[in-house]
Length: 126
Image (cartoon, rainbow, N blue to C red; front, side, top):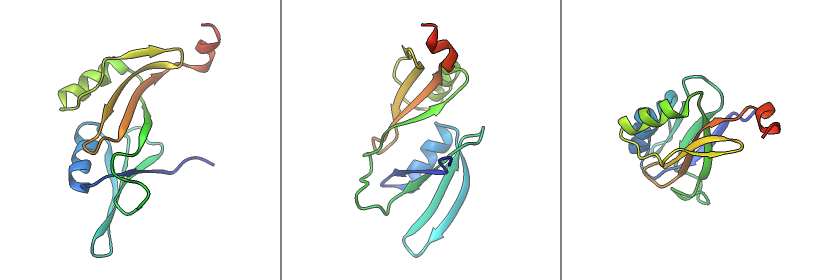
């Protein structure tokens, strides 16, 4: 079964919405009130796939506690430049057998990875 939604714990949904929309270029697919004090804020990369929900209601998920969520891109060099131009602070691009990547943090310190993954057949030949 595919992953549908990944919850990202945040302290300020509005600031996080701006970051994920403007820096990571995700689109809002659902923004619905959940009672008087919460909202369901669901976002998705332009190319589709799994979505993320910016959440405030899981007591065990403190803002900034999520690390290692990886987004796949076709061109890490272009995406690195786009993120920096949009106000993000990506790390220098690194290379590993599984791909080339940059790391960055959202306003709460949740750790994100943007990667151009190596095709499995390419890994076997290294």
